[in-house]
Image (cartoon, rainbow, N blue to C red; front, side, top):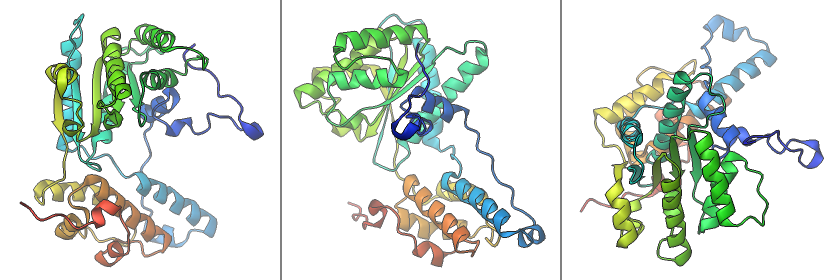
Length: 343
């Protein structure tokens, strides 16, 4: 069996209680794909004012939960990754060897993981729609590369996703055979590998871990898609191994947004998703220059800033986001660091 019931943890709590938050498990990934968060309606002013304390608390909790997620904006990078990934899957459909892959590379906080997971979600939704009765299929596998990864650690990440009942004494050959067998039986179409920058190919273990990924890509008839920070600088594409990877993989590069209409449109989409009673429309779009200065154009930093300000607006009952309220939010360290002057 690929899946099994959650095992009781200490105190009788199921060990799998938080699996839905882990995309690197089958249960977590399926929950992510199936998730369709309801957007709370903004109550009319008179109804809102008449809420009892208990009902107001529940109403506020729903809005806080919404603002903690907001929406996934279809940025150009996400659209490019999804289009490229779908095209490569078609190219690889009848390939017996030398299958092509995709890399998503860029600085931190530029939407690489979002693009990778949205590609996986798209592929799985399409598969479920086309094969509604194939409930045992696992069209997408999502794993992350552990720090200082070794070949066995890579293999174990695959086994962990499938929840394979392997003993600690299993060697890498046993694990790889089990993973490849399940992948074939489950009709895996896409393998998404995140945090690839954790592979240090300058070390023997890192180079062998890279070879292990290549081995899986040859054994599993699927399209492999990698994501990581500035992969061009990690050494992954240098040397004999690198030449082989570079010859088979395309690359989508992510980066900060410029201060342009695309940036303003992104802010407008986020602002439109807010559920605050006193927020004035277009307040944030008029602050596009300020928001660009605060975040250096990084979508991850922008989301952090707006989400935090929206949650604060519910908690302190101001029910609006202003420049003053944004000034009080401490965003990530990167966005607080002055940007180096242009060369």
